[in-house]
Amino acid sequence: MRKSVVAIVGRPNVGKSTIFNRLVGERISIVEDVPGVTRDRIYAEGEWLNNTFNVIDTGGIDLSDEPLIVQIREQAEIAINEADVIIFLVNGREGITAADEEVTKILFKSNKPVVLAVNKIDNYEMHDLLYEYYSLGLGQPFPISGTHGLGLGDVLDEVVKHFNTDIKTEEDEDRVYFSLIGRPNVGKSSLVNTLLGEDRVIVSNLAGTTKDAIDTDFKREGRDFTIIDTAGMRKRGKVYESTEKYSVLRALKAIERSDVVLVVIDAETGIIEQDKKIAGYAHEAGKAIVIVVNKWDTVERTEDAMKNFEEDIRKQFQFLSYAPVVFLSAETTKRIHTLVPKVIQASENHAKRIKTNLLNEVIEDSLAINPTPSIKGQKLKILYTTQVAAKPPTFVVFVNDPSLMHFTYERFLENRIREAFGFEGTPIKIYARQRS
Image (cartoon, rainbow, N blue to C red; front, side):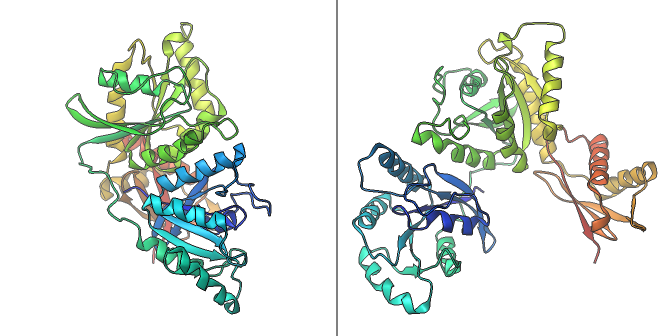
């Protein structure tokens, strides 16, 4: 099930970034009392009443025709289109302005659920200021104070009422869903076309051609697949088209829906910092990962070229030590046959479950090889271990005291589990819990 998307919109300087930071629980957006500070759309994850959702902060919607203001307005309108629910923020101390009315018109056209939040209402005596906002026709105005964190619970209660809990893909257990992520122009669309055997996706040498995620079903080696091609992710400061700014959000949606994520790297230009950042999105989401080095035909062929490139990947992507690396050329189809088997393997390992008795046999052997450490005179005791989830495989180790589980010993246990049961291509998670 994909997360719902909540966009915070309004004219400049009504406190959108402050509210955004409150909702996601950390100071991400720059907050400054100057209109137009938030120029890019910024997104993060929020949670309320066991509902996790993506929150989009937007630049203020203004009536000015200045080029920068026009671009900010366009970004906000795109955010509205992306959102499932919209929080419309106004400044309660200034009353309704022409800009507020303009935003209201845009929101009516969107046909999206709108929650009207009146900011800077710092005490109960100011509630009389709310009445004029009923004239906007957006329903009940909710009084809030972004500075003091007042009233946000009521706003979020209303927001989650509009979430569609059935937002999900029509998945079947045997089908493998995988997406391609990577910076622009690494050949993702070409790779899709090669896998499908036809020009299903537009291919261009211009970076950023793909603007949205495209789902395509196909069959290979007796298995059903759904492949999701996503727009290339480009680091902030190098993104110029407002629509491309939202491609990262779309890519994150694709990652959420995927069993396996292909991190595509350009062999010709090599590894850059942005490749690691992009791969981190999939790793943090707990998805199975295959690293795909595309355009391998453009690399000078030497005896150790492939070995050296993979060593560089292992050095640069230490957090993806479990991910297999596939070298291929989408354009010439060289080594393309090596990709699908790795995708299948990663998908199966991602969903793998281990019987508790077999798991504990491995843990007991591990304890014999490397006894648990002692910290300040206290020795860690492992009582038993069980797998509590798959996708990704998640294990709980019940111990006498979780604080005695050092991360190095946790890593040792992970390596032992991998040696015994495989799990190539998927992250695994281990949690130490005290037995009640």
